[in-house]
Length: 591
View 1: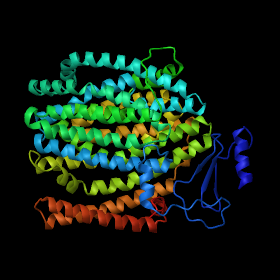
View 2 (view 1 turned 90 degrees about the vertical axis):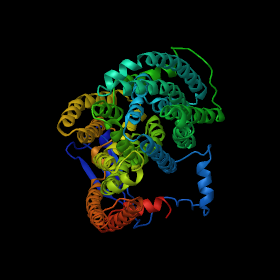
View 3 (view 1 turned 60 degrees about the horizontal axis):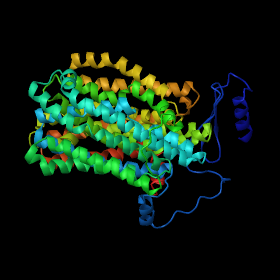
């Protein structure tokens, strides 16, 4: 084993045969090593550990503490420094709670405003603020700043990093603030141009809500920079808590003010949530670890120049990950209530997507950046490949259950008030179409952060821009042929192109090999998902035949029975196929 590994490393230096592509080795711990020689890089994959069959030469792992409550409280301490695994668990838990609150928010809007003028205006009002944030600060202040601060921290220059933080915050507060003022005046023209299907009353209300929401972008940017200070220290408490406070602000604003000022209350609550959550929580956390902000303008600062270098590609380019919502809203505005229905379906879809893609990606980012900064290219490639394999496998499984249970889930969550059974049936169809691409959204989030961790934002920007431009006619054609369902299909096609382009580019640059993914495990999960999803779909249709009347109790019973049946079938099939995923998952959860 050691001899072969040495031979592979020799090939990295330019020696050895050129026609050998991969050697697969099985050693005593059951870990597969893929030694890729044609591309001059070495990859080892171990996304799904298996049971040991021999005597390990590794030192024994420390015995876990016996008190689960103590371990949980330690993870929740703001000063706790996390591993990649504990960070992922914390952020996944936060994502689940945040999305549950998000579902409450969606439910409230659908209940009170349905798919009418107020709902369409509110959902469309987020587009202009999001665009300003994306094109002026790259929409990724924390992602790019993590890479910069990691470099300062690893070289013992934290004081210089703190000064760069002050320079970046001061400069961009002026730039972003000026852009927000201009947008306040330009909002009416933008709304009429981007939402051509809005009538004058709906456009006027959307303009008002847009103007209320615009200042929140300052809170997001400043909070992202302060949050990066905590991320490089592997402290994820603030990032776990801020989405909860942000969503709570929207809900509380509606509950307190909706009877007085209508849908504007939700916009005011959103701004209050952005101030209290993303900004204040992150700022307080950064202050607690010793970071001090001072108003400084210095365009020659090294850190500021590096941040601009990393962020400009994100500013001048565009990624379909963000533009997808904008494009859908643009076309859907021509259909009455289309913006709201598509937004509700996407919001429901983003709940599991956030758990898999955003949480895993955010947790992995500082670890990827640390490995790259330490020039551990081998470990970097292994961690990225393992992360992609895990989230893709879980995404394939989760998507099957989501599609099968879509009618009951959407009806249970949204039906009521001004949102009818016909509306929920339409939303469920869009939700099922979106769910097909769950594994792709999960994988691209990891691949994108691999580029960001390596300090390369130009390549993913160019790839994302090209994919977005290529996807635009796909959205237009499918909308013309199939209406709003065509937009959901186009979204899946676009994100497939986005994921494939990032994966191929990483492979071509010898950063992460495509051969290092665990294709056998992915095939097992795909087959399992199709079989389990089909069984649950059939059982759901049969129950609908016996219980044709809609009620929340029937929806809940279908969800519980369907979920239990899906777990039973999926677990049995994964075991029969020889998958290590269930055992590995239970082991990592200490169950």
